Each structure stands twice: as structure tokens, then as C-alpha cells.
Length: 287
Length: 212
Image (spheres, rainbow over the protein chains, first blue to last red):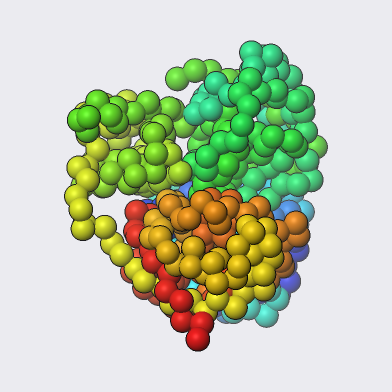
């Protein structure tokens, strides 16, 4: 059984997979990889079954050693990869040999890097997923130096290609589509106008739960409090006072502030790569 | 009042993978939740009650938003049937740190707080805040108290608490700002069990005083 030994962790390294589904009514959110597109790509590059667990690394700087030869791929926020004494590129599969230490540098752009190992990584499965939900504190706890991870058997046939062309993660403003609702009618026309025409900025208060944004006030035309209701991935929630929050993988399942609009999944994946300071322009439209 | 005329819901869009049914009250929410679950609609991934809404999310690999909209508008709320609700009795020792504060806030004697909390059945309106954390409604209106001014960093599992119109039992150790009335030894959250949570939306909950 192939094993990975974690040598060092930068800010955060988590096991993440497709997450938990069908339990939101019990207060259990989906969690799972924050940038699903990069995560899925990493698994495809090494011929893993969809949903195999990968390591999600925040701001790079992960090092681990493998005890047997294994194929791996690194996607998402691009980092320099050292494997033994060799360098490898992101978005392509490469072999790590028995005894090699694999080291990820700091990303030049973006926030979250995914490491897939052929077979996937085994973890502590809770309610059908190994994903660590940072808000619910469920799943496989955050990786620490000294942890030994087993490689699993979630593999399938090799893909036809071992390199994937991927649009670069830029550092310029992020354009995010936003489907208005369910509570856009709680906001004034002025608020909807500002939402469409002004810029927002990702604050340092950004994690797997959500991204708090600086930007113009979004005044309401509706007074009173919202009765708690279900919240979806990508919801842009606007508290009475304070800054709007764009919810990511570890969002709460219910919330008591109105959601003005929802960013579709492709936009959520890009938002999950936005570092603090990134400017965001929303492109609201009605369904 | 027929079921359909009373309950024809407004469907609010939640992105391209969910609809929010805007309903009148929490009882109707559970009737709709039952209807959606029993209909077994293809590609429905989550059915999530709120206080007066029901969120229905879809799996985009299986279905799409327009198909789900059409399926939901063709449904009617599940008919209400007496005696069909899931019921739980929870034994509570009323020795919570905020019991006297709640008595002061409500103008009731401590025994009267306990009698009010045990005197009416509650219902799980919805879950949230933490895995297995259930918001119970339908209690004695005299028990409406604000949250504590300062949230506790650590509330033990099994703590029985109230805030606003709600009561709850903390399913796991967590931070919390609700007023603590007492505690129960009942295990309400077990991630190894299926389902992992005892107090599920729609269930009726009665508290029984076992302090002495």
C-alpha cells in the first residue's frame, strides 16, 4: 500500500472530495473541494474516479514524501513543483518515485492548489465524505507534518492525455455572473444598480465558508428580519449591517439574511481562487 | 380551505440549481417537504426546510432548473394527518446556568419557566448553525427571551436552551449565545448513525422534567 508522509504544511492542507449530499436538512452542508473544476481536473489527469479525495492546499508550501512510485497531478493555483531533484509543470501528470519528496512552492496567482495521486487518498470518512468541513468541523482533520496518508483504490483507466490546457488564473478583476434572487426584491433599485456597476473587493476575511467583500452599500427597501431559509453554494448574502458575503463550499445550510443573487458554479470555482485584494465585478441578470 | 388553494407557493430562483418555495408557515413547509420527498423527483439533491420556506436543490448532471420548476408546480402539499408525526420525549435536568436569568427576563418563577418549557409540544422547524442543531418552535410565548449579551465559547453537548421563539438542544460541544435552561443525556447527534440526527425537521419534541 502506497503511503504519503506529510513533511510540512504551509497555511492549510485539507483532504477534499465531492462532499456530502442529501444532509443539508440536518444541518450538514456539502463541503468538498472549493474549486471543483480544478479538483475534477486533477483526478482526471491521473485517471481517478470522480470524487476521489485530493489534497487542497491553500497558498502552497506543502511537502510530502512517497514510499512507492506513483503518478500525481497538481492543478488550480499554479505553483512550482519539485519532485526529488526534478521540476514538473502543473496541469500534467508526472511520476513520483519511491522516496521522492514532493514540494509545492507559493502560487504566483490564485489561492488553492489541488494534488491528486493515482488511486486517490484515503481519509477519515464521515457521512460519506472525507472532506474537512471547516465550519461544521467534520471529516478528516487538517493535515499536519508527520501525518501518514494511504493511497486508495479509486482509479479507473488512464485518460487519453496527460496534459490539460487550462485558462490561467489572472490577477485582474474577476467578472462573475450573478443570477438575481431569491431576495433581490428586498433591495432598492439603487442597490441593484450599484451591484451591476460598481466594483467589490475581496477582503482578508475569506476562507472556505465564504468571501467577505468590500464595496458600496446595498440599501434595502424592505425592513424587518428575514426568517431563516436554506442557502445555496454561490449565494451572495447581504447582512443588515456589514459587508456582503459570497458563500463557498463550507457555507451554512440556512441563514437569516437576504440573498440578493447567486453566482453559478463556474463562477464559484473562480471566486474560490480569488486572493484578498482581488476586484470583483458582478454581471447580474434575471432568470 | 383546500390544500391547493391555501398553499400554492411562490417559487423564487436560487441560481440555476435550486428553487425556494416561499410558504406561509412552518407546518406547510413540512407538508411540502414530504410531498417533494415522496414524489421522488429525478435529480433532486437536497430538500431543506427554513422557517417559512423550502429550498429544493438539483443535481445539474441529472436535471435542470426548468424541469424542476415544472415538477414542483405540479405538486401539492402532502395532506396533514393526525398522529403521523415523528415524536420524541427528551428528559431534561433543569439546572442550566441561565435558568434564573430567564426567570428574571420573563417575570416567571423558576418552576414556572420549567412548566412552560415542558408544558407544550415543540416542533423542529429547521436545522442549521451546526450539524444536527434543530430550531424548535411552537413553545409557550412567555418564554421568548433574547440571546445572551455575550456568547459562550463552549456550550456542552446536551445543553437545552432558548432564544427568541426557539428552543434547541446543542447536539455537540460548540460556541453558543442561547440561554441555557438545563441539559439532557440523550444523544441527539451521531455521525456513525443513519440518519445521524435524531431531531429532524417536522418532528414533535416534548421536554420532560427529571431534575429531581
